[in-house]
Length: 313
Image (cartoon, rainbow, N blue to C red; front, side, top):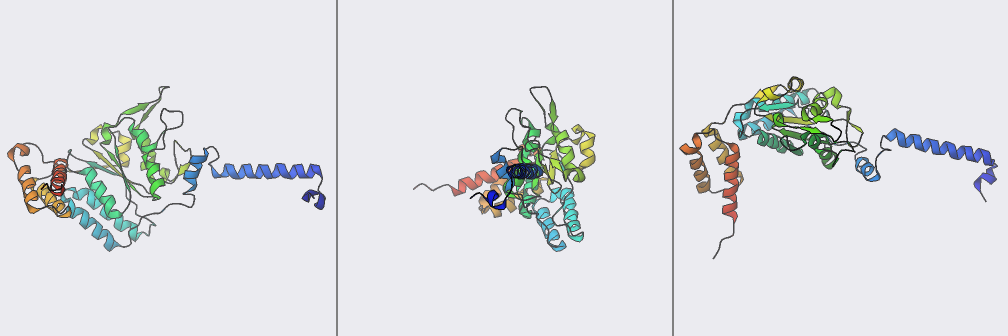
């Protein structure tokens, strides 16, 4: 028998109950803010409905160790290392649930290892690191994504990094930010990288950042931003006010050779290979230009490949 007949509810009352239940379910779905998404997109976001992790610094002593390791690897980056050192100690003193670092703009000549420093920082923190080349086409979309309706719409590296790693404070590097172009839609609307970054670099606004692709708000105030530039004067004032430039100098030959020797030990290279690289870097032909960490890194990789190749009998 029908349950309604046992209870004695009339057909009109049963219809009213069904309408009320349907309305309640619709309101609950709308409250999630995900009703407008496709099922596969909802499934991706549903995986983080209980939140994501925050990587923290357990003590001021650990903050000192982290800064010391970073400085030992790249002493010429001391101005940037000092900023993150103080930020790490402050996060511990103020009892933050995770490491909070102000947005960094590393400004200096090319080839001194600005993005390498950022990757090393992320490695020491044990957080994921995403590197976006601002010189690429549609760099703003690469960082923050694009709305549906744009050609090749996508979520963007920022939200993808958080969703994949489930870490709220990854290191996000935007390399050569002053060289970013402007994306233009088929309707003629311009979308520049600097404008896209402004709300993300302002902590209070970033707590309720709206993703262009998912059209859902996320707390992005914990993301560790590292922007790099060769000439900060080409950047707009609103971006510079949120990200004061940290001026960096070129490497010296001694610093570059010291880097090669430390990396050689990490890569288990022979002393002969390391000495050969240092000798080449000291050659007068290369010294006419500023020593480049990029060139030294390629030399180290080439030496490692040569030493690890199979021996022919």
